[in-house]
Amino acid sequence: MTSTARQRADSKTKNRTILKTIAPADAARLLRDGAILVDVREPDEHARERIPGATSLPLSRLKEAELAAPGSKPVLFHCRSGARTQGNAPQLAAKAGLREAYVIEGGLEAWKCAGLPVAEDRRQPLELMRQVQIAAGSMVLLGVLLGTAVSPWLYGLSAFVGAGLVFAGVTGTCGLARLLRLMPWNRARGAAA
Image (cartoon, rainbow, N blue to C red; front, top):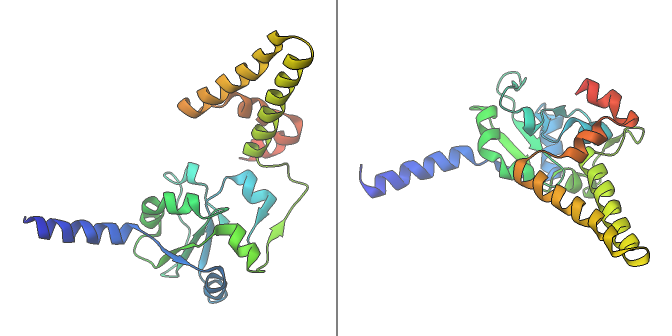
């Protein structure tokens, strides 16, 4: 195969795996015409705030899940900002198969900015990642304050949390998230997920 032919073949493969973006208003029009909407965020994010009618298919479960989309209706994927869907476009395109598929440009945030409807359930706990950010940030701040006001040894709390965050980033395992998942306000959701 010549290099020009190889480049054309590579280009065709890339074009098949990159999803087209669609503006929220155009996505709403397609949804009214029967398109399928798929939310790729985690279940806790979907439970708290979502586009009405969206099916939850988290990226973390994408490989083993089936996309329940009848016929050849277009499929629209979204996340909070569009970054996760764009970053996983090849996998999402593979899930969509041969049907027309799009990423909602700007995700849920752009959808809200366009004045389109959003279903919210404020009784649901904050998303687990936000809980981790709040807890870790609070412990770092507490360590700094106590280190300054009480004893320099208490800066160790901030160092410990920082080391834990580095470990979580490197291994993909977050002990704080696991601990927070066991808290009473997260138990019902954790059992369902």
